[in-house]
Image (cartoon, rainbow, N blue to C red; front, side, top):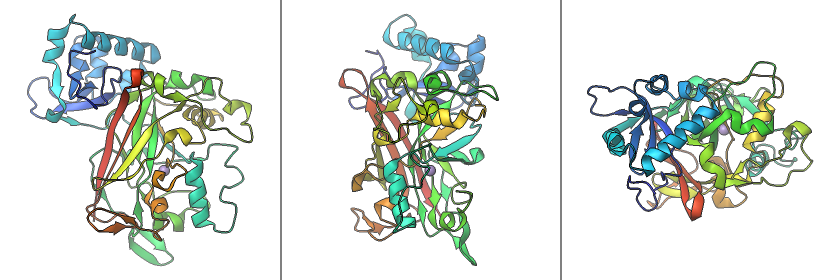
Length: 396
Ligand code: MN
């Protein structure tokens, strides 16, 4: 138990300790963005706790990258120390002076994103889109069960939760240019790479936790009309690259031991480089709210490809990892209708609009709509680990 109060139902328990970058609203001496850890309704200023040390210098910056570059040994050391500080009276006075109420800080983008990759790892999602876009043919393309399909996205337009998303303009069809009429969301789980790898080497599934630091929630905003017209033969481009929102708190893999589960059965058996000895699938339960109203609860554990398999595939050709790389799962959809992770699936491309409590309905997003994705996962002793949320509002 921590001496910092953690309200009932709050997912930022002392077993969680997610990392973010914050700045006190009031400013003053020692202000500026720095790395902190959330506990209950507070954030502990880690830069202040390690002030005057090289580690403290790496924490007194506007992103987690310098801390992440230090590698898994240092991640474990800091986690152990923070937990000790929050559960014993050893440095309680010093801690109390460096705890800020979350209500009094601004949260920043936690990571300076190096490369951004998006996968397509949910079988239900890939099947739904295949049925909508290629009716009458096999919904999954022949490669889908053999490798985690993915594409390289745009790192520079990964934005922090709360950023307003402007409706993109583009080509909607031949000769038809204007604002997207099919603006959509994709509820995804993102993985933050901490430790780099050398060019020309592979990162095996067993090295997942040696490179990936933690997990964020991702909303991969998507303009379906622009996407549908542009995507063949090279894949998503401007229909995706205008904004990708991420949650402010990076939940360390070390938090998620109780959330580890085997993934779904895979057939055909994956090639040896995609085989997993220790399962690293994760039992995250996502929730999507549209203007405050829950519209879906996608289960991440049903995703066909695991995050360790995605990483192994991403590097099997010798592509190197950089600190700050972000790769996302692709839309997380379950088999049930109320588990779909995008509006195009929830409304079946507009044929079955989603009803909201105010009497309105949505096929796709309207200007002024706010979408919020949150998630929890099992923690120790029946507790729930919280991921916070990623939110964004659409403007015209
Ligand atoms: Mn996506």
